[in-house]
Image (cartoon, rainbow, N blue to C red; front, side, top):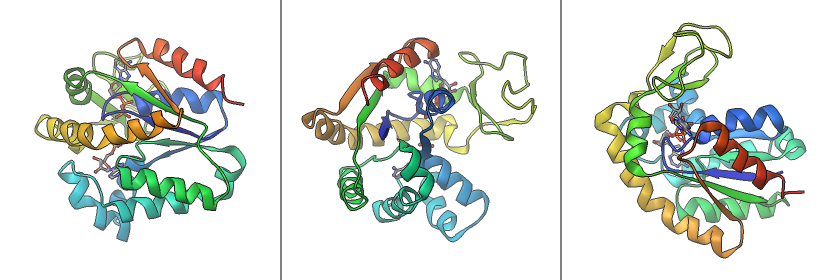
Length: 218
Ligand code: ADP
Ligand code: AMP
């Protein structure tokens, strides 16, 4: 199963991915996570990406395409399929992905777009907190840990807010990505791959809609 999980920042891609990987063997590939990890480890990729992610801008297409291509070539992806989260985000990336998949002799089975109003996204991003130990995502109000201050997944009490989720960065990220995502949605819709779901429901209800789509893939 090869799927793309698309949506503006804060739409719930990471949250739905956490559910999907518990039920399906697909490999979760989130370009944002790859960049954050590289920045934390101060690798050459991290040094390149930092100036873009710090300002909420997109990392250049050639850099992003290369890291995705490299990841798609790994054996675990060939065996289990992929779930790309946050990629592609530009038309150039969508075209590069098609070319890479053709070369790797595989294809996209479904594109799931989680649709959420931009005003709602601002609230979601400003309340997002992440477990520093395992990366699980919560929201201070809409999706708090079951026990206050303790990660459901690993028991850690160490949470952080992403630098680019600070209020002054959020509007820029949403506006920028609204522009770039539109042509890609058209591109996949024309090919009959696009499934839009309502992301303004409870997390469990969004996941029910995701599962309904995944059930249609052989
Ligand atoms: P993305 O990966 O698309 O940027 P996340 O999955 O990190 O988005 O979700 C952004 C924030 O919104 C997180 O704080 C998350 O807990 C919260 N969230 C996710 N889905 C929902 C939902 N359906 N309703 C309310 N809050 C949600
Ligand atoms: P995300 O975790 O998906 O919100 O991504 C965090 C940041 O990583 C974005 O604001 C961009 O700077 C960068 N990024 C993630 N995915 C991409 C992509 N497909 N193309 C370019 N930049 C990306």
